[in-house]
Length: 587
Ligand SMILES: Nc1ncnc2c1ncn2[C@@H]1O[C@H](COP(=O)(O)OP(=O)(O)OP(=O)(O)O)[C@@H](O)[C@H]1O
Image (cartoon, rainbow, N blue to C red; front, top):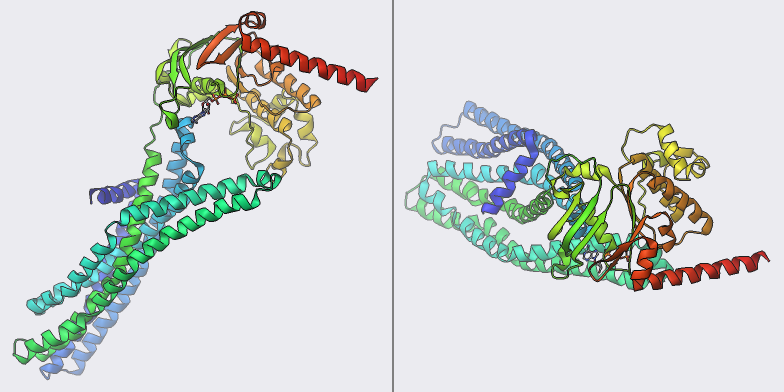
């Protein structure tokens, strides 16, 4: 119950000032619900007048007007309540979505990586949409459907207390049935929601991996995965329907059965002279049916469970702690990993790095080399504070990265990832990435990144929309756009997770030239997947056995580290072979 209260108050807190629309809507619903009672009151007054032989034209007119006004007020107020609740709900929805997206921008990337994309999409889309249903529909309807019967019951109590209490018996039975219906629902709802999240994840994987699926002719097997997810989701909702079906029908039948109680019991009271005819008729017609108004509450109850789940999920994201720490970024950019131990949250017991130490001098260009999976990308993620180390420290300019203002840290450390992501925007905006840079400044950066002439050759130059055209950019072109972004950003520390995919030689020459321009005057860490990238580096660090095993100049590492020696020899042999082939082709 506490959780339910907390979720509702949390939702109202998120609504901010818009909660006043919701309050107003609730007030309109409340008054509209009260109006439900007025026609019954009018009918009773008429019955009493008829019974006492005092039914004049004035009495008839008076009660008819009263009923007409009440019915009109009831529907008008219910309409107003709906309009206000929708306004409040859509504003709140907008705020919650912005809050989540804003929060996601501030939380460490690594923590977000631990959530699957499908789960985040479900929260932002389906779950938050449920909040709209709750605020715009369920909340006012709940008040409305509760108020009417409660008001009628109070009125019936003023007419005849014992009969009014007896009229509640079907409700008690219906509540018992409803209790049965909801027992164990939490678990079932949890499973149903998990299957929905899984279905979303499979759909995202299916769509984003479409090219791969076609290339490997995996259509049927990946469709099987999709079908399994749909079947699982279907099975869960069927299970819920099977559990809820019988008690739901029983609930409806019981609330409709008031007459079976009111006619004999009221008749008994009437025959024994305990109540007059008008009271008997009132209870037969009103006492028998007013509880049916509570029927929609059952449906609201089951939807409410989904809303609580949605609030919990939205809160889960909003509760991811953002990095705090207000210290300014230092002038000195020496980077130091000291005795670092680190394991990813998903594999807490498997240390990727163990007592790893490494120093990168300010202005130095250092390459990280090593076998695949040894932890090179992990090291750069720790420097950019995508994750926090479990032991030891990462410092820049002698200060722990945890002390810095996180946004400043991200501003000062530029990262060029292996895979370039282009947004559905113009090429200009894709290089600007939200900065105020002018077209000239963007072009200057693009020239250094060796991509300006290519962009100028596009149908609309820098204004060309990436969107569908984006898929036509080659890997090398995309990479040079990413380099132009980083050049424009001009951060003093540069991390380059070099692309593994080999570009064609011409493209590679341009990329190398672009990288050289990008690295000028900066502290650079390159995750070197190709040893040719070492040309621009001052020192090399070999990552193996959960740490950095050897650091030094190319010659030093070559003489001291066997992995590097073997890798270099293979690289030299491959180069010699390429050279020979090229010469043969020329001859
Ligand atoms: N988010 C993650 N959760 C759990 N384990 C991870 C995560 N990211 C990487 N790992 C694991 O950590 C280890 C180091 O990965 P990392 O990406 O740092 O290696 P790498 O040296 O950069 O590899 P490559 O050269 O292939 O890019 C690997 O065993 C990898 O499977």
